[in-house]
Amino acid sequence: MKIVSIIGTRPNFTKEYAINSVCRKKGVKEILIHTGQHYDYEMSQVFFKELDLPRPDYINEIIKGPQGYETGTMLAFIEQVLMREKPDATIVYGDVNSTVAGALASVKLDIPVAHIEAGLRSPDYYNPEEVNRRVADACAELLFPHIQEAYDSLMREGYDPERVFLFGDIVKDSLMKIVAERNIKVHKGDYALCTIHRAENTDSLERMTNIVTALKKSGRKIKFPLHPRTRDKLKNYEIYDELVQSDNIDIMPPQGFLEFVKLMAGCGMFITDSGSARREGYILGKPVIVPINLVWVQEMVDCGWCRIVDNNPEELAESIRSFTPPEDNRPEIFGDGKAAEKIIDKIIERFG
Image 1 (spheres, rainbow, N blue to C red):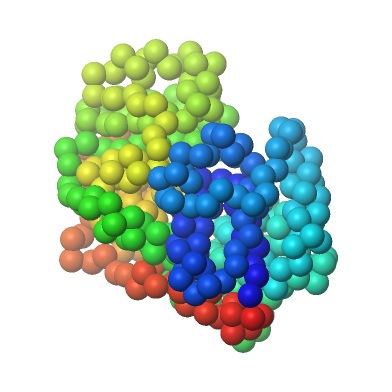
Image 2: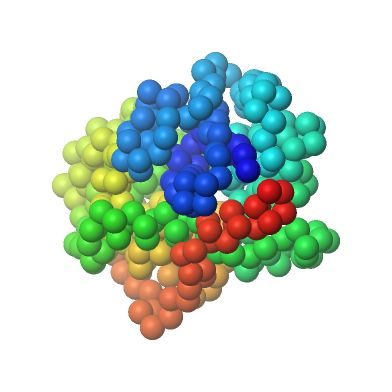
């Protein structure tokens, strides 16, 4: 059996790690397309090297432009590869532009699509990721929601139950496999780890000023790996120096994947606006603070391990100082760590 997997962003690389491991084990031929959405291959080599992923079979040299232009060029590139390779199925991940480009290119060539992380819904219907998710779900022959909440959304929307399978979250598969194989110690350190990269935050002077103010006021020791785009925005807003000069904040360069996992494993709290990274924090048993009103996994909030603080520096600073989740209530929201194997088995059963 031959499948095509489409990746282009950091979360895709880590999810692909779980799928690629299972494909090798089961003798499935996997063709890997790198769309170049967030990283060109040269920039993303560290992920492939650290995760022992094969070099992509096809690499798109994307020319940056408006989202519609970038998505269109990715779609055209993927279509050419699919016409050449003629796979039995295509796997797309999550909700990025690469996802919707791969789903549309495949369905227009009558190639079945398997959408991993299907069904996740946000109240903001016109959020770019929300649009991508809904389009990819509509294209998919097999839908693999990663949490009960996403499965329930698909059922409410009328998707055929014979096409929807809740096997768990491959983020957990990848993360636990890496922690075990690399002997990474999970413990509660004395620092909070912070990552900020979403455009809704970084494109707003007010929001970034409030976040920086809160980080400083918290007084807590904070390690802050700074994405280049976030750094440039902070400099443009003239608040970068203020952040660097803070006694409690350690500004760090962007981290390789393994180094970042080690930082997560050793932190006492995780502050992030990332959708995937907040799940990684929860899986590792870290209290998670999200400085933007985007929930996605409501159960993380309901069980008391994730707090949403939207554009309120005083509340954010206080949460960083004092947020403590209930140690006796951290449910296994993301499955048993065997989602990737179940997903590939289902794809083989349906399309092999």
